[in-house]
Image (tube, rainbow, N blue to C red; front, side, top):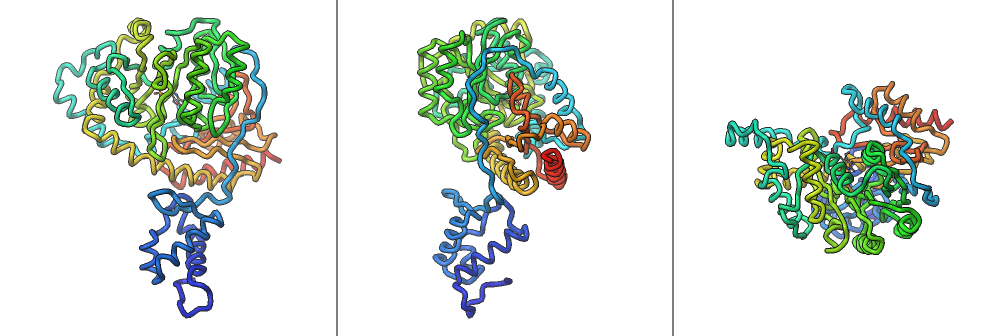
Length: 480
Ligand SMILES: Cc1ncc(COP(=O)(O)O)c(C=O)c1O
C-alpha cells in the first residue's frame, strides 16, 4: 500500500494500521523507533486525529507498538522475550570465590582492541562526550597552570565534592555534606576502600546472585568469603532470602546495587528499599551500596539511594563517573558520614590522592550543566540500543532464549537453552572477533553456565548486528 485510499472499502483506521505494519515489516520502522505523532500522521495521511489514534491503540493492543507517557508511540521488540527468572534455589554456604581463573580469561578478551565489544559495560561510549570533556580539560589546564601537575587533596577536590553533593540534591532530592564524600580511583576503588573499612580477611560478604564480577574479584583478593542471595528480576534482592541468610550466617557486610544492578538491570522499588534498610538495622549489618548506574535509568528518574532512607542504618554508597562520563578518568566516590576516618586512612595508604585534572574537569563538566545535558542525550541512545539488541536476540537466537528487559544502563542478560555452555560460546566468540561475558563469572559458585551478558554500550553499527547474528548462529549450533 502506498497511500491511504479514501474511496476504498476498508476502514481508514485499518489502512493506517496496514501502513504502519508495512513500515515495520520492511524495516523502515525499527524496534525503538517513534511513530509519527498523531497530528503529523493525520496531516500526512489525510485522515482525522481520532482515526490515527484508533489505529495506534489497535497496534498497541496487537503488541506491535507501545505507548510511552508524554512521549508517543514506539515500535516494540519483535517477539519480545520473557524476562529471565534465574531459577530459585536456597542460598548456599559462604565460600571462597571459584570463578577467578575464568575472570582472568574474560579480562584478556575485554582488553583485546580488535573485538566487537559486547563484553564490556561502558555505557557512556554509546555517545561519548569527548569534545566537551576535552575542551573542558583544556580550559582547566590553562587556568590552573603549574598546579595541574600537582597532587589533589586526599579527600578529593572540594569543588568536585560540592558538585556531587549538589547533584544528589538536584537528581534525588537528598542532602549530602561535601565533607562526607571521598573521591576514589573509580567505582572499583570506592568499593575496595569501603569493603576494607568494614570487613577483614575471613569475613562473610553477602552478594546478589547474579552479581557484578568486580565485587567477586574484591572479595576474593581480600581473602573474604561470599554468600549468594537470590535476586528477583523485577524487585532485586529477595528480602525473605536475605533475612534467612542474615539469620544463618555471620554476614559482615552486604554488597548490593539498589539501582540498575549488573547484570540483571533491576531497580529495587522504594518500599523494598525501606524494608531492606529495616532488615539491615535489625541485624546491625553494614551495606555497601553500589550506585554507579544511578543516573542511567531511561526514564530519567533517580531512585533514592538506600543510605538516605535512614539515619541509623550503616550504609556506604559508592558512585562513579565511569558509566556516565569517562571510564579512563578513574574518578569515583564514597559517600558516608560514619566510616570516613577509616576510609581516609586507607586511601592515604593505597593511593594518596586521585587524578587532579580529571577531578577539576568533571567539577566543571557538572557545574556548567554539560553533564546533565550529556546524560539526557545518552539515555535515549542506550534505550534504542537496548531495544535493537533485544529485537535481534529475539530474531536470531534459539527460541528458548530469555532476556532481561533493561530499564537503564547498557547490558542485556540472556538465558540460553539449558545445554548451551556459555564459556564455550565465549571462547568461540573470541575466535570470531567478538567479546561477550559468560554467565559463571557473575556468581561465586559458578552458576549461570548457560547465561551470557551482552553490552550495548557502544555506537550501534553494522558490526554490532553482524556480531549478534554470528552469536545467534553459534548459539543455535551449541543448542544442538
Ligand atoms: C556494578 C558496577 N560497579 C562498579 C563498577 C566499577 O566502576 P569503575 O569503572 O568506575 O571502577 C562497575 C564497572 O563495570 C560496575 O558495573
